[in-house]
Amino acid sequence: DTEVTQTPKHLVMGMTNKKSLKCEQHMGHRAMYWYKQKAKKPPELMFVYSYEKLSINESVPSRFSPECPNSSLLNLHLHALQPEDSALYLCASSLRTSGAQETQYFGPGTRLLVL
Amino acid sequence: AQTVTQSQPEMSVQEAETVTLSCTYDTSESDYYLFWYKQPPSRQMILVIRQEAYKQQNATENRFSVNFQKAAKSFSLKISDSQLGDAAMYFCAYRSSQGGSEKLVFGKGTKLTVNP
Image: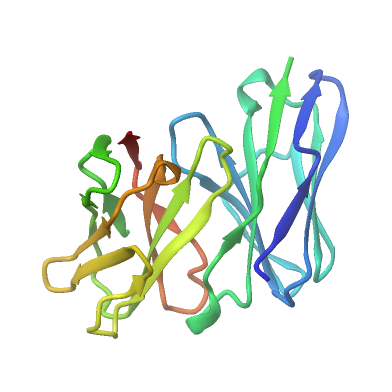
C-alpha cells in the first residue's frame, strides 16, 4: 500500500484567515514533504521532514508553517496568505531521505484558493 | 546544480500505438535516481517507473519502459499499447543519492494526449 492521504481536497480562504492542511501516511515512512504546484508547472519543494524534524526549508515565507506531530502526520498551517499562494499543495512521503528507499509517493493534493 | 530537461511540451499518440517521451539531465554525480511521474487531470502525482543509475538494465513496468543512457544523460519513457487512461502530464525527475539531498529536481513536463 502506497497511500498518502490529504485533507481537505479543496480549500477557499480569505487573506486574514488561518487554516491548516493535513497529510497522513501509514506506510512507516520517516520522511515527509510539502510541495507547491502552480498550474502547468512542476511541483516546487517547500519543506522536508526527516524523523519528525525539519531538515529542509526552501526559503518559504513564514505565513506557511509546517508541523510534524508524529511520524505519520504532517500539517501545513496557513496564515495571512496572499492570492498568489493559490495553488495545489502536494504532500509526499518516502521511507527515508537517503539511500535506496527514497522514492517519494504523493498524496492527491489540496487545491487552495486565496481570495 | 542538477537540471532536468523535457524538450517536448506536448505529445500525442493514437490509442494502441507506442510513444516515447524524452528526458535529459545534467549532473556531475555518478550515482543517482531517475523517475517518471504521471499527473492526470485529477492532479495526483503517480509514480510510473524508477531507475537507479548504477543499474545498467533498463527498468520496465508493464507497458512502461525506459531507455537509460547514462553516458548521454538521457532517460526516455516508452509507453506501449497506449490507452486513453495514459493521457496526463508526465514529469521526469532526478534525485541525488547523496545523504541530505532529498530534493527531487523535476523537468517542466510533457503533456500526453491519447487519441481514440
